[in-house]
Length: 257
Image (cartoon, rainbow, N blue to C red):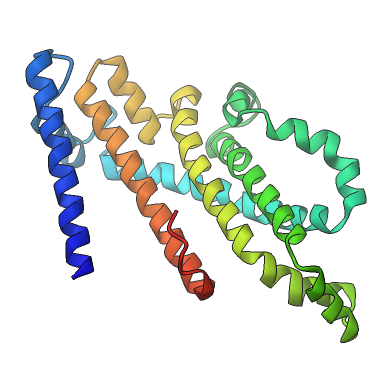
């Protein structure tokens, strides 16, 4: 019954939102402000016939998603090992702090002009996504290591474990939930970055490019289609990641955000 009530509540929320949207449309009566029906018509047109570049909505989303996954994968490959290393070695962190700390405060989109000049093709977008996802993963990995209880270290040392065994048997399992949370945050930031990077970087295909092209034509209905698509795909990615976390860490079933 709880599942049915949950679905009914969600449908009611969508109905209220659409009703408010339609009410605003009737009150403003502006040709630039689309109605829900107009947005759905634009959605159907882009899905079936494509956008101004001839690319369908699903193809634009797929291209952007692949770009995000490439950058996110590299962020995982680099962020987790470096974060664990910095978490284990205060000396190494001290050496790199003057580089890591200032760099993480630079917005990823500030690097778009540099990436556009020195990189080409998907490499520029991979770089921007990597920047967006890397630092949340790095900090989560460091935090996960710092949060490992000292008693676990002591037990491992008492049982004769060497440093590598302690890292593999104690540090990684204990810090994995924190790292996973950081990875989920990094994925969300990466998804936000790719949209803006495609707009600024002059991509010919991608959901950001689609929104930018329709914005130039003042097609607000089609722009809203892109915005809604971004939101729902981001929501879907987050839910998949949450389900993956609950599967890997069943003792953390309370994870909902």
